[in-house]
Image 1: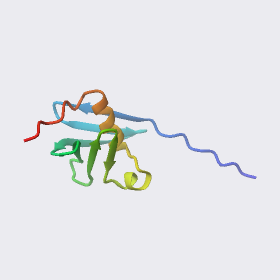
Image 2 (image 1 turned 30 degrees about the horizontal axis):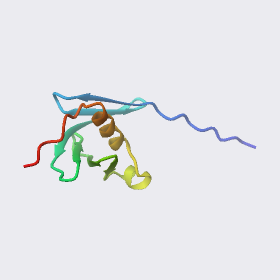
Image 3 (image 1 turned 90 degrees about the vertical axis):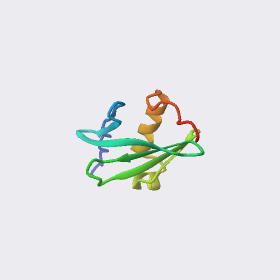
Length: 102
């Protein structure tokens, strides 16, 4: 009989540079840098994360305690690293207040 040993989850970290609006998400030894932009959202807050090479672009919406992302992980598991990162940045006050309504 062979036993299956679960591979330990990679350590996930995030770094955010507010001046450059740059978010770096790391899992294990692999890091991905995203430019972060806030978009108008009448019901909450919405953010666009885009890689410099434009290979990946995601939108994260946050309304109260709920959030959503349009990446494959979020569609499959209902959560993802993009949502997690935005929620952490918001909880720490690093993304400031929501823009005033026009």
